[in-house]
Length: 159
Length: 159
Image (cartoon, rainbow over all chains, first blue to last red; front, top):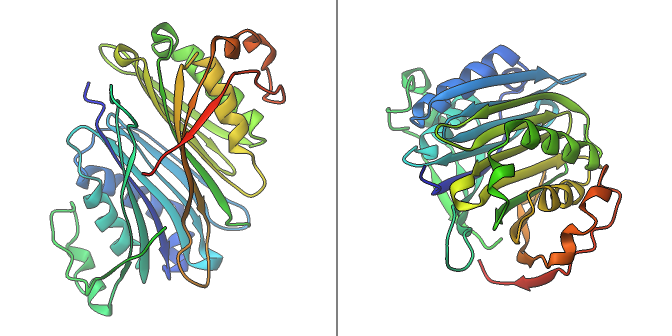
């Protein structure tokens, strides 16, 4: 099996607190994100936090997608780690819209076995700001194939 | 709940292929690692890959620990993401010994909600080489409190 991995670490902020605290909706979004990334779902485990929040993982044949939410901060920490030919960027697109995030901070790491030297490489660390238009067509994003119409401002910064 | 997160992305290489292909042993190691990191286990999901390898996640109250193995390459891609006061380094210690890895490449990322500026910060990217002595006391590592006696060479490099 191909060991090449692409791992997105994402911090979503300014999210809709009611979405972040809705276990069924979060689980549905994460499964939708897994499909959009072209992965094959193996298992889906989601649990509520007390007094609020959700933690969960979608295990896929191509690795995993995880989410941990803090509704009180409008914040979610999410990972999309996929191997082979999956497209984690599509999962990110589904989540940024589904959580109605105002901003996403994204670290992109290449992973995978290498016979020579280090196998991980940080490709980018950026912040995306979404304008109001980002959510006008949120309902269109059913399988991640719809291109998000957000006014996205990319602001690369040093980590 | 405290959003402060500490995330270790680890690539283990030169591992014992028979361990990497042993689902029960990998699941036991990951659960042992979760306990060593002082986390509270919520769920444990592990699946075999065909023709070989294991994929799995331990969901913990403090986030998650995941592993994906490629026995044919002696390689495992592992994540230890913990929030609050958990100690992911202890989980790393259990895995590096349990997989009998020759080398670990580790990226350490601070995560967590911040009102000001980016919330993720890459603290380090290093490679650890384990000498033979690393495994002489492997049986002592039962709960992660044992300090590993490996001859560890840290070699920081730019990512």
